[in-house]
Image 1 (spheres, rainbow, N blue to C red):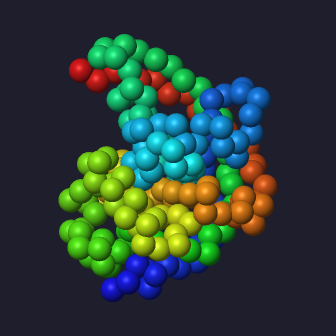
Image 2 (tube, rainbow, N blue to C red):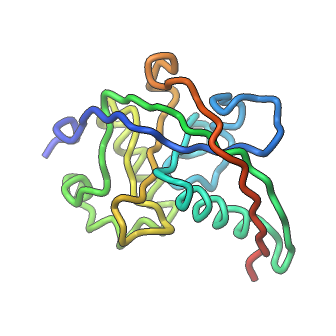
Length: 180
């Protein structure tokens, strides 16, 4: 099955967070291509991640700050969460087992935890299809397909056509302790 046959339009509301009180906007792409630890993009690929709901925001961000802190080091972070309307013309939904199978992979639950593998999968999909984004299960809720992340490749979209007007949702405060 060709990847192009998996491309579909997707419209929805995604939640995105930034440090509380920063002057840059929620759709500012200044830091969108820097991290080497993102699951679905490599450093140099400008990408936004959006969560399906506040539980996914908390679970995903909590995992990141815990992993990035030195062992036993505590940290408290306040984040502003925004709702953003999103409209993509060409998205691959990796919650559907057909997507993984089409490129010779087992069900996503078996390999989503391996960042090298997810980055390689995203690289392969970007090279072989004119994809604008991916719909992927949340690592925090692998057993619940209603809890997802939408990954948007900024170099493949027109932001004015893709994103609607962001609306502030709420501020959250997360406490984390670095892994051992």
